[in-house]
View (cartoon, rainbow, N blue to C red):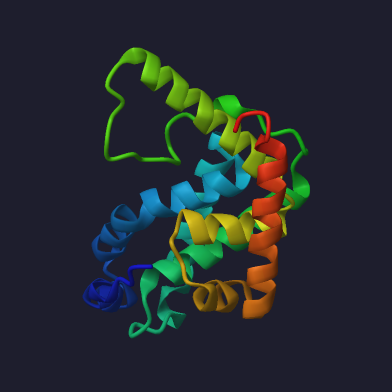
Length: 184
């Protein structure tokens, strides 16, 4: 996980009322927060609302933020908590059509349209399976696989033990293998 310690000057300016500085923080981190929350929710419109709410809440609470800490984990925690509350209120069905291309960003593009189609279908199957995971497994899986967080960081982020992270990640992988066995 890459920490953004270079956010400190912008945070200090934002804490002194500079809206432009906070806007720069939003621009810098909104895509990453969006991808994290979309992976949790699977609903583009709901994700947009939650990300916007998270940055508004962050702006209102910026004076309480410790500028020596990295900004992304703080703002993503706000967004994650809002998403978890949204999940509790939302229906269980999560249509795959709302995933679009937001989650996986590959550096290599497929060589032809057939490869693109196959890759797209595999991504849809994978994310459908991820969305079928219980939220506690899904959260750990997403943080490890998409955010590339270390077990210790996930434990701190979710306020659980490292052993619980390991157990949940193991169970998430087992469940995904079970859900995707026909595709493998």
